[in-house]
Image (cartoon, rainbow, N blue to C red):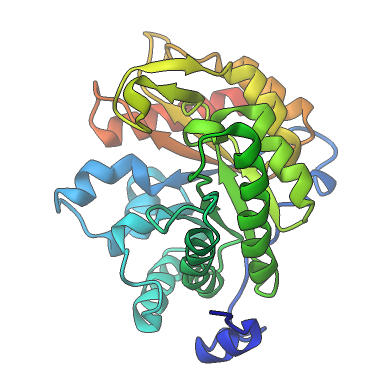
Length: 316
């Protein structure tokens, strides 16, 4: 079923000028020339255990980011409000709470909306259309982007072809909203830096980019699973980050555990951020995403923030 984009804009009351839009990060490389800098945001997934357990409500995320951590930019996860994308009053309440605390909504991470890379045309198109409502929600919130997954096909060459089609179609829709569609390395072929960047090159749209995640470069897991099982094919995190950064519209700073000096124990953050700096990325958002098991989420978030602040100071 074809959906007219302008009609969609009218129905959701998201006409141009109705909301403030976060500045596009696609040209952030042009705005900061004198020294290396980046802004720190907080990914909602860092608190996924607390939200799923009902220890706090998704609607309180903006206030928690600002009051608990002094962070004034946030990255939402649609799993915490899966049925609310078309609920305009709910989305406006999210925006009101963020505005009340001076917090910028940066992006929405989208999961469980179908296979954008499926070789089956109907399945792929259904997934594309499933994302439309999240583009509208991102516009209303003032985000600059939605983060999507590229799943659905096992053969690498077919995956590239179908990903170009699915991603390209979604980006064409999102362009009318001035919302970017960015792809995280999130398992399977999307975690293979060379394959993912080939997709981005072929789509060739200023509304398409990447979201490099330091902790998600596992290309294949035991028993063919996407998550949970042992990784049997690991892509090099530094090579993958270097390949993705020329197209990056943000960075996901994943942390798991820390050494006695406050460094990420398994990831060389100075090396990673030298790659980021040398790519020309400057002034954009770097999102904290703590996924460790040794600390409470709040402790992990604070340690990650301190690490990012130290790296930023050392490289500026």
